[in-house]
Image (cartoon, rainbow, N blue to C red; front, side, top):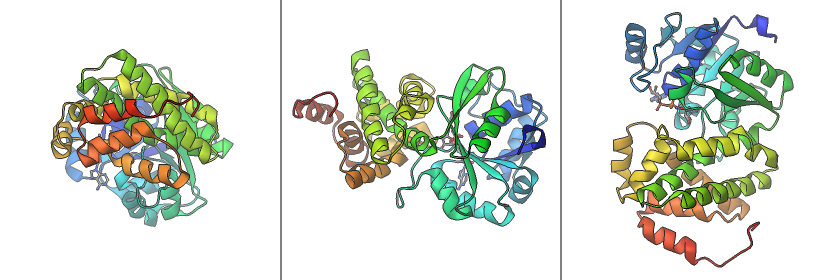
Length: 336
Ligand SMILES: NC(=O)c1ccc[n+]([C@@H]2O[C@H](COP(=O)([O-])OP(=O)(O)OC[C@H]3O[C@@H](n4cnc5c(N)ncnc54)[C@H](O)[C@@H]3O)[C@@H](O)[C@H]2O)c1
């Protein structure tokens, strides 16, 4: 498929990221359909040309705001799946009756399915068929910044060169530069688990720690994720790229990051229910934790930071006790 053949793009999911991507494509002059799960959301976006969680952005009036899934799926060759990871399987099932195998799904959702340990591409193929064309679009990209045109670099990953190159061309513009990558599994593993490292950095902030602690968490956290990726034959270079190190840095240090902000609350000793209630939006790192623990056990990989975060989030462990335990561990070489 060539760029000239792309007459429209449909985005399924009108959360902050789906909406920011719709604005980007519409600014580029591409006919863009933004499909909300709930009719009231489509009506709101159309009337106000604003998203409640993207206060700085004015939405392009050429966007077709709808909640008609059948129309949205049938309308475009490229379908962007932009809902939180916990809804990806259900959404793919809802799309299935209208989907045809010559379409390309661009997955932007970051997470792992807890029961199956599937990445989101694997979930999509499990539902829509194993030959479904899926491209993963992932990297350091806060919706708040993309929606107002701030410079952003991101990765489009697929085993199929033609697919990733097409997505690269469709999404790139003067402030959004897309790189291509042939290791989608590595990109998705990095994307799913970087949110846990952001939670850990937030916990460090909540405890009043300094920059040293966060630099250590980012470095050692990335090492934990890279070990996991290597056990799954992913390309180690992916983890030092945009979707690995890049996304960990942005998520761990930015005030836009709800994972980081949730971590701060956990670090202050606030309990699970209240943290989620105060954040008020999906915290993907919390959802990814159980998958990460299962993976670590399956491949016998030591992941002390990720296990500590899991203890704090799900087992109510006092964050200071968790930190003491991390420091009490046997002294080891840096590559272990
Ligand atoms: N926000 C970002 O900056 C950003 C950047 C890159 C990737 N992502 C990823 O994109 C995905 C979506 O994140 P977001 O920030 O846009 O989410 P969000 O929290 O802004 O929005 C969640 C959306 O899910 C919808 N929803 C609620 N119940 C649903 C259901 N049962 N089925 C389908 N949809 C339902 C809601 O209507 C809402 O529009 C996540 O996996 C996230 O990790 C987000």
